[in-house]
Length: 335
Ligand SMILES: *[C@@H]1O[C@H](CO)[C@@H](O)[C@H](O)[C@H]1NC(C)=O
Ligand SMILES: *[C@@H]1O[C@H](CO)[C@@H](O)[C@H](O)[C@H]1NC(C)=O
Ligand SMILES: *[C@@H]1O[C@H](CO)[C@@H](O)[C@H](O)[C@H]1NC(C)=O
Image (cartoon, rainbow, N blue to C red; front, side):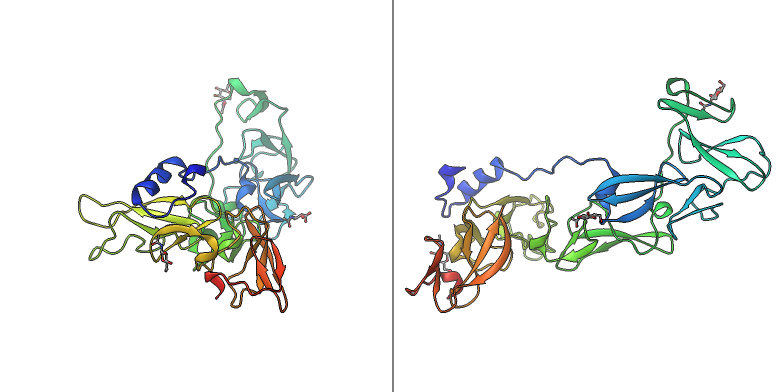
């Protein structure tokens, strides 16, 4: 990458960059809590009796027991029975002193103490419950498979959660129906369940801005365009055989300390490029000049993210020295 840091213009060099480091999507952990805001409580998709509290994207389980063995996702309480549509309404009326399978789990079962009282239990590790034999048998002898689940059966109405379809998208259940929503001009922050400034949200794959490669009438062919989300990022719109706009342009980033200049479509020194996204992105410096007028303000950066904006008072910020100086200092971005 370093040998390309002096890059100024030719499309050929940018194409080379495209091939080098196309952003890869990091591996996903399968914990369901990766989708939920901190401290959200949901029902375990694999049990009618367990709840999950999501703390820092990790599942923490609790189990309802005794005479209130079912978890109600709407009230967050353990209840005697469930009548919602989540197929957790188990009836003991015909099964007194018998065991019933947990409809959501191969491991769980209910013991019907009387016509109204189900007690929850789970099989030992590596054992599945079998309603026919009324016992827990070895998992490899079992034909049980866990069923798929509906999010709105385990999440209460109004809770936003990540749908992993793009940084600006999330899901919410409304009256038990799953809806897909889009944050406008912002990104969805999974930890807080809110739409936030793009700079504040980590995003592996920036969604395509609308008409990023132009319109059918005037497509952008073999052109570099801003990703409208970061200062370094851009898309390459390739010429299409059918003459239409490129439907899936490739994303890439300028080298360290350079930003993409949408005007002449090149990577230039960061302090020469006007950009309102996070100016700490991709910087090797701990302090960078802010885009605020007068060149008196600077940003404190940490790991490529802005911590805060500070002022030099009546002095000016010098990026090279990384400090405030008396001498008038100007950068194109803040003049
Ligand atoms: C998430 O919630 C837990 C428990 O309330 C808290 O300790 C933790 O700091 C929170 N995490 C964040 C990122 O706020
Ligand atoms: C339960 O056990 C019976 C008898 O061994 C067997 O035929 C059946 O397939 C088992 N059911 C499941 C779901 O494993
Ligand atoms: C890009 O445009 C700026 C002015 O907008 C100019 O100063 C700069 O030299 C241009 N860079 C190239 C490589 O053409």
